[in-house]
Length: 313
Image (cartoon, rainbow, N blue to C red; front, side, top):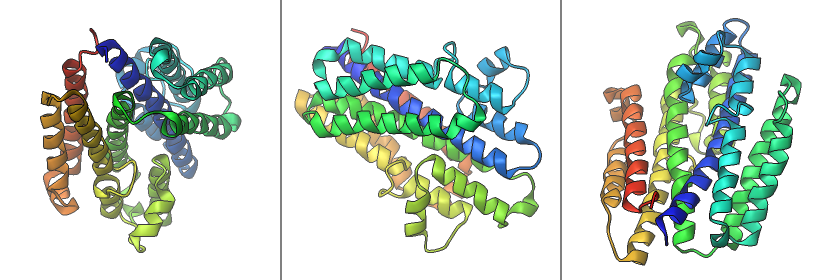
C-alpha cells in the first residue's frame, strides 16, 4: 500500500474519533456545569484544557462560558480539533482513499459530512445541544458499523483501526487526568451526592456508566473508576483495551508486510508500562504523572507509525 493511502486511512478514522470524543467532552462539561450552582466558568475552562486548546482558545475569547466554549469546540472552522473541522478532515481523507473503501463506508462518511456541516453552519443553542451531540455520536457509530460490517480484514482495515485507537487513548487519558484534578469544588464534596453525580458524568463521557455499574459491585470511588478506565480490558475505551487493539493491528501489519518496524517495539513497551501496574501503584506514582506519560508516549507512537509506514510519501 502507498504510504499516502495508509496515512489517509489512519487520519480519516482519527478525525472521526476526535469528532465523537469532542462531542462527548462537551456533553460531560455541560452536564457537570448543570450540577454546579457556582463557578461554572472553571468547568468550561477544564473542558478547553482537556482538549489541549487553551492557548488557541484564549487568543480568540476572553471568557469561559457555555456559548463561547461550545461554539469553539463544535463550529469553529479555525479550530482544527472542532467537530466541524474534524468531520471535514475525515471526509477529505475519505475522498483521498476512496478506492480503498467499500461504497458503504464512503456513503456513511459523506452523509455524515453533509448532515453535520448543515447542522453546524450556525451556532447551536444550548436547548438544542443534547440532540446535536447525540447526532454526532450516532453518525460516528454509523461509519464505524459500515467499517466493521463491510471491510476486508486486511492492511486497509488495520490502519483505520490503529488511527481510531491512537486517538481514543489520548482522549480517555486526558479526560481522567483533567477531570480528576478539576472536578470537585471543595474537599467537603467528596463522597457526597454531588461527588457521585459528577463522577457518573465522567463515566458517561466515555460511554462507560452502565458497564461500570455492572462490574463495580457498588464501589463508586475515584480509584475504582480510574482502575476501570485505565486497566479493565473489557471496557472498549480503557487504555488497556486500546493498547491491546493497537498491538493486534500492528501485528497483522507485521505479518502482512513481513517486516517489524520500530513502532511495534514502542507499542509493546507502552502496553507493558500499563499492564505491569495496578491502580495502587499508579496512584503512588501520581495519577497526573502517569497519565501525562501515557499522553506523551501515545503521541510518540502515532508519530513513529507515520514515519515507519511513510504516510507522507
